[in-house]
Image (tube, helix red, strand yellow):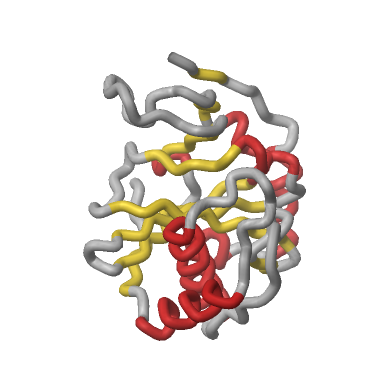
Length: 198
């Protein structure tokens, strides 16, 4: 059963991220850079996940593309993806990953949802990136974001993966580096691209 981990986001994290973004430009990839709000939500998500894993504040540094690596944990690279919502997540909610970033050699994708209304970050779960093509669905540029509703469409090709297809975040903490690598290599043989368009 799906169950996210909920954190009330400390003001210290939000202030640190705001200060960092005021002096650093991380939108230098030239693709899927995101506006200030997306950058802010993304960095807050990274800080919350890092704090959970390492029990300390994340050091924010660097500009431009991170090459798909936000955190290194147990020898594995992690890319944290955060969506902004005004509600809490449910099992059938989807998380997004840009197809343009499939080229990055990332090991693990962690998905979060930032309820800005309640100031609560949910860590929804994670998957190995090599599983994305099997667990997710590729929705092409121009596809309606909300099925059946016109006018709001994806501006880029986006992978959607539902919360029900994610591993509980606790598993990432529980298993050793050796066990995680064994599972990752077992999963690499799977993968099938499924495309959906209007």
